Length: 430
Image (cartoon, rainbow, N blue to C red; front, top):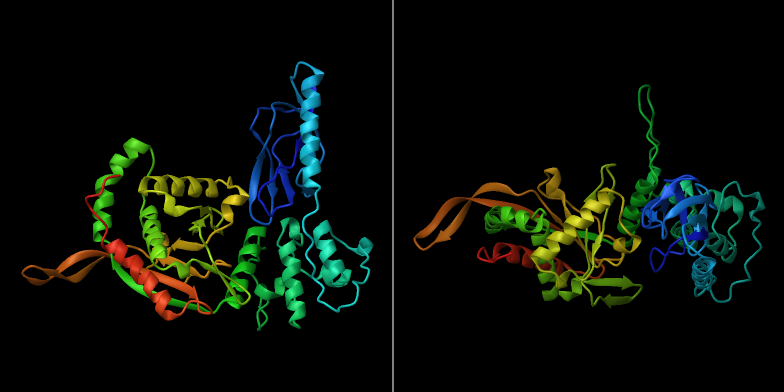
């Protein structure tokens, strides 16, 4: 028998630690290689962690609620290795990963030039846990523990994350001494609670969504343009092809990959919608990474990202869309699948809505909402003159950041998306 350390895996380029939500196995349980043994939460996503080796879970080193750095041991597994050489090799690999994870990232200085040295901050009086990164930022900014305690955290069990404290620091510099919680939950007029009212505490994901939505509205002046598109050709083509696609690929053919294809084509025509803002700089993104909003069974929303969406055909887009949506609802997305988006699409039509005014996913500058497809009477041109016919129509709602996207560009993009949908080739194969 050999003992192997299960380490906290790396779950994204910018993720240095994770919080243990729950253990799916207990000491003494037999586990198979690649079987999920615990659930962890990062600032990006909740996900399950599979074991790297099969055997018996001998000991759990990190309990529920602990914040563990990437590369640190979280459990001991007893494997069925035949000799000590195998065990030594595995331990050596573990220590190599740990040593790499201990390399210090580049330090970010939060103290402006000419500012006095940070004052000492005593965390012994703190009533809750703070990660080393949060403590370092608090020390650099001379944030006393009493002020730190007032910050409402969006992490697991209310833990203050890096984003929480940086947002607080930004408000501090602007002279706004309000907590992250107050930014999105404290109304100007106090709420009233009557007998029979039910009080529902926000879960961790809802707090994160609320914070990000308010941050986006505060950061970017939103403007929304609307276009109605005739998607009759698409409806007829999908109805003709969906059974063939299901039989051949074993998967569903939805409208979403068709919408994404049209968005990608429009972005290629108008690349200045595929940008990000960094202060007074505009970063024109080379890759086209499309985020797609997915509603979860809990009622929350998550946005997995299709990287290099312009490299897929309709079949490829259909398969990746179905895969991401399925794993999103099963809470099996990887943190890297939630970052790097350059433009987002949200299907409000799936809720029966005809249009909407979506909020931009920062640091992107545009988001498209597609409404429900409805049959409508419409005037069409024929070789014998105009006629009224029943057509399938839908509204496209395009919200964009008016700091860098004017009405001309924002309106042209959504009009071009509609053009690609209306000119869809009904003779194409799949």
